[in-house]
Image (cartoon, rainbow, N blue to C red; front, side):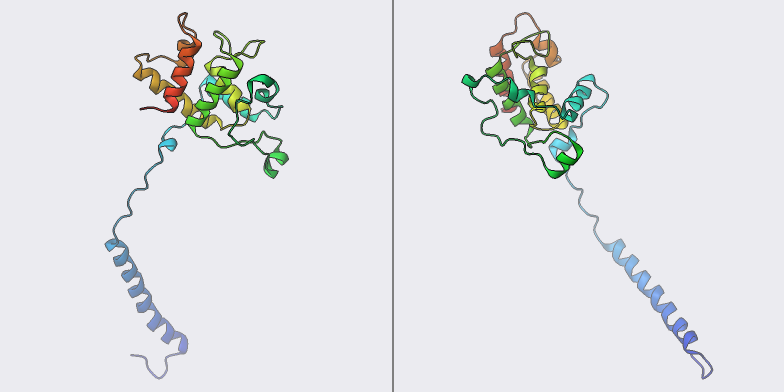
Length: 202
């Protein structure tokens, strides 16, 4: 009980001390009784992270970082029509201009595969090399050409590669798509069938 000689400061300390303790105890009880928050589901795309150590991914990073003119635009045959039709052209942002980097048009992994399919249909397909002098590409070359054109990121291309690998597994060919591409009995029709099935798994 405060006495007549108690100062205002002493009175504040005597009253606020117990009140503060009571408030902290009340908060701790509320926290203990509060149900734990439900775990946040991880999006499917986030579960697939590129492996930075792979040579393929290093190539994809180098292509994405190269601010040079888009190779997919300069070698398109006019009579074939643009393989990127229906997708917005990548438009550089202010940050892209400041950093001197290639603009990116967001696409899903499935859309990346569809663009690869159309790129090969327009430019042709080859084996044993990324691309030849005529502009024909293998599957890996198509990945890099679509990426260089600004459609998706290296992570998008990696997810698309995983979809291809899954489809090869369903077909009974659990091998790298680059090896599958270069097999002697492979045809361009096989390539289109694989890319379309990987983009639209049933």
